[in-house]
Length: 430
Image (cartoon, rainbow, N blue to C red; front, side, top):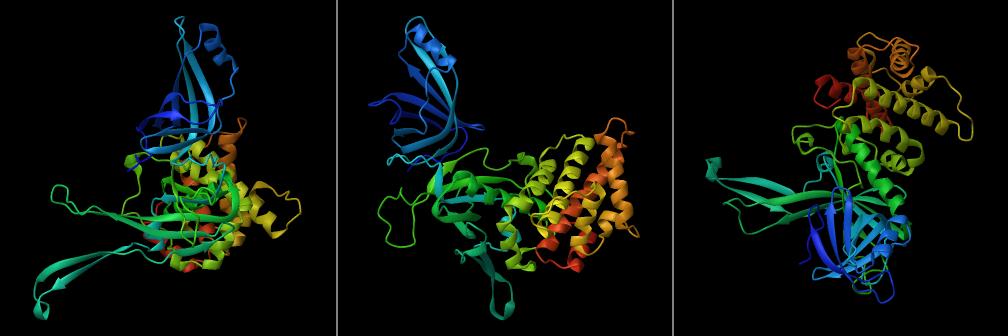
């Protein structure tokens, strides 16, 4: 069984790419930045020194082989070499991602499919492949046992340009550990394209889904790459819809979070998938060019625990500006948007069609809030303005983030009544 691709794994392998006839032994170590390759070279001192001056074109991709199989490393750069007067040197290369494949020499710069896993997705979509049932005695007296059943559910299509789907997955080790039997479950995000699309094109859809989870929970939600697929790198010629997917590793695939900040079962979303309009979800996924910028900027504020409140306000304010601009641009394609900052904020309220109390305050108004938010923003942005008080900066950033979350709910057709109720309950992040 092949070694799983995860941080800390070390592979000692033979090279199968680069110079013609190349067959050298290298050490590939997976870490939090990607893959670090240490390559011993039999070079003189002068030739080894030239490695640090950019004199060598590194293999792209670098294909390796060991007892666990083939490994393809992509997007590489040199990180220097050490030299010895004894004729030995050690060159170091860093690659951003690894794929457990390579026999066919495929570079995986383009792919036909990509799979990722995102925290909170299964709860939001209400797709969990495990059910439990208590077995009661006669006439309902006493509990005689419990039944636990794991069975994959039908995949759920969300649409978009890459036919994004949600697919359940589970694993079970029949041997107990410490007397405990376990079933691990996951809900996977999978994109597919008939033709090869760039790695980045597929990755964009998965990043949008990560932003979506962060918005619905109001908290950072981790994401990780699971596997990729190419039609021209199958074990056997495909005879049906089934394909062989390759394990993949890329630490920078999605934003990661500290282990102690991971989402828990007690965290609740602002709304669930079945409370949204499926067609509007597909439309949102198709409009990456409009919405990826504001959501990416807004969610960045959630992933930095020690971020000063002034910086947090700046990020949220810039995200709101981008969102207001995108709303205006989408409403009038081809027309230049030249509105003031406050006008861009009002575009978001106009899209909503209501003024959330969680944003403007009970009895507050859109106009007064936009003016106050703009003033607070100027206080941390411009040196010729009085610095915004730290407490107000924190409050305004929080309100701005709630406004973006309300916008997403409205974009998905979620009712105002439901959003207001969930915000009032105060159990949906923010």
